[in-house]
Image 1 (cartoon, helix red, strand yellow):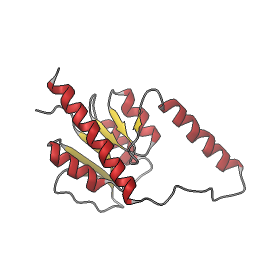
Image 2 (cartoon, helix red, strand yellow):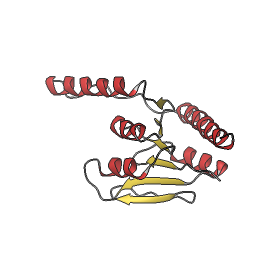
Image 3 (tube, rainbow, N blue to C red):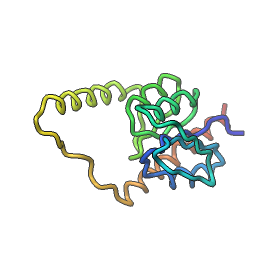
Image 4 (cartoon, rainbow, N blue to C red):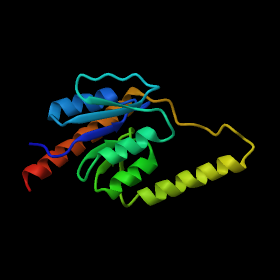
Length: 156
């Protein structure tokens, strides 16, 4: 019996199909969180619709998970809260947030936000367009994490 669950900050998450496929493959309970501005359905996981509001979904995801659970989010604040609870956190690009990198990521977010506020230039360059290779890379790394956690549970 698997003791951990997967929680997804699913608002605008481009890898929900990959997460569903991996959750089904490994029979891990899946919870998808979105706000009332997004329509989301899943045959694999439970969809939690949270009232629209600043950070409402982020807070719901962070509150729902527990030690050992896996969270997929692109939000550094959510990642920090989940890491503080002893959870595992993966970005939609496949890299993992850790206690070793979260402080740097939060500081970088702060400095970028500060630069945006002080600059008259309102449009800073955004992320590159997402590709199928990005999704494949995420799926491979996410699958590896789930397999590793399952293996650790069977050996403990």
